[in-house]
Image 1 (cartoon, rainbow, N blue to C red):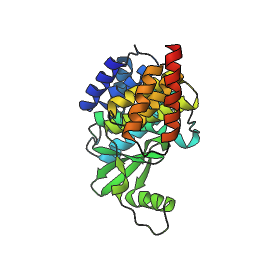
Image 2 (image 1 turned 30 degrees about the horizontal axis):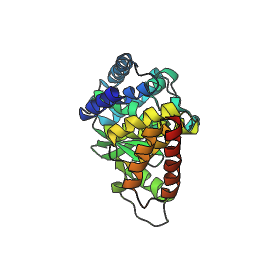
Image 3 (image 1 turned 135 degrees about the horizontal axis):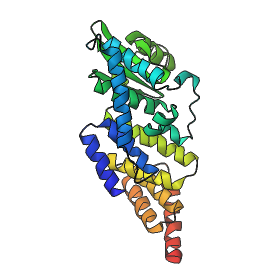
Image 4 (image 1 turned 90 degrees about the horizontal axis):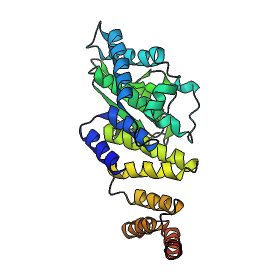
Length: 276
């Protein structure tokens, strides 16, 4: 995975969200060819541009053109009508979204962002706890698009109202609580959700590969080191597992799971002596 990790970091440094998100497909196939899917996204962007060509400087029209192209030309299933199955890893891959026309909220948000970027639309992806909105500035003020819900548009007041309803009554919220997600954050969230899906399906090898890519993005995360150690254990790579678990204990001596991790590391030391 080391060459793939290096390539992923290089793509993120160039802010190449499209290729970085497609490279995640290497979890399934180390020889995965991303370029043919890059061409498909460029074709989608060209169709969106045709829709927006009458007013290419109108952010409302451009955003609507992207949404219409994804819904009509690509045929993405409308988000609100599609039950999001959290243990289906296929929904988090961008190339599988293009093939199946069904994806997770983060995958759909990434596709919208990639197309919008090629149309020179100025936007930010806003990551909320269970939703991704695209914030776009217009002459009359900002508006938000939900790519997963057929491009539904929200005003600033709509978003504030939505957030207030899920928080303590009367608590004033501001846009500062949003996470503005760039390429690194979006791919990180894509991989995190993919990892969770593989863990739920007990697919240790794919989960391990996903964690490896995550460690490229977040190399100083003790929790990822712990997760990798546990997955090494399942794969019976005991030496690697003990190393990672010890590093986690060193970095997080007061973590709530310290005793469990210590017990596992101790068991693995015995296994290492017998098996290896």
